[in-house]
Length: 254
Length: 285
Image (cartoon, rainbow over the protein chains, first blue to last red):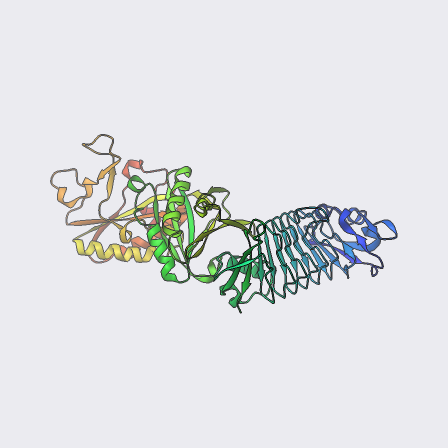
């Protein structure tokens, strides 16, 4: 078995591609031909296959690597339950839609709703880990039920909106209204942030789970976490107090 | 026996040790304490899940069910209560697991929360100081209790000095604990009792110098004092290693003989034959 299968974009995408129909969770068990036969939908063009869009090499493998600018490809990693998916570039909307396990790493930025719920749905990802090396669009982790979403640069508006549990860690700035309507779950802010009105300051302390999380991210995912962040003090804001109020924003004090 | 490894971390080594000392208190023998526990070693920040200094504790019981209960009691009363501590499972790869944090979380009275980090679930329990973090489940495995050797000395001072030297050497061995005070037992026991029906253990009269004239003594001429070192461990290899270095260090002036209590083979399935152990490659079986 090879270490990974690689899908290299044959040509820049001219239209939006809906990758939500790809059985991302099953790709790791498929050979190159079977991966290439997976159907996707191209806006304005209709049904096509991964093999038409990507050159597929090496399979089956627990790790799938997508190479190219996929900012126009939505639903990458949808339904992933195990294994590892690496995007060597940007990713489109709804990254990890309905994901329940495994790891997605985006080495560029991700569009709106990364790890979030699809329109009308209450739950976003229910497990697994998403690591976005760049920024994430609006509503990252919206409806997050479980799992870990890490954004190494900035997060857009409404990160963790209506989240139910899980953790979102943002190393850059946090857009407006983070965690609004959330019931539980943690948003960790290392950059600029403004807790929304229904959040209330609780205390400044050392949250004991954060060093475990941050050291794990450093060791497992090579996230550049500083010792000061590991051992630092955090301001805890509880919210959304209009909902259950068991959620929190933990804001690092540099 | 079953053994669990508990990792206690704290803001400073001092507070990790305070919690560990309390947790391993009154845990010398399963006979009277329901468990045996001790400090395995100190841990550097680089060895702990939260990067803080820590202490590794081993806790042994006769049965799996007992282990869960003892962990809940002891972590709940001695680690949860201690400032700045967190409590982690030291056997994350063990297949057999018991709930500890899953029970202690109820102290949070509904305000507790959980986090899954790297596939491991932790509970955050709010306390007046801040939060206590404890792992949901702890691994356990088969362990070994009661590895021992007896130091037969010409006088009490020589016996104690030899025992101290043995203990110091054993403390450098990983995977073992010395559950008795300072690692040393002065009241070695035999299985059962001559006089009291139902008593699990009573004084080891064969090794009591004061009883030499009135019992079937096992003491050679000249022996005036006997001390025992009891070793519990994760496996036979660890116990064997500990016994070997302990005996080597204990063989000093004033020590007339080293032997072991085998209790007629009634103590358990593992027998550590000292002559084999002291020869190269000897292992307990």
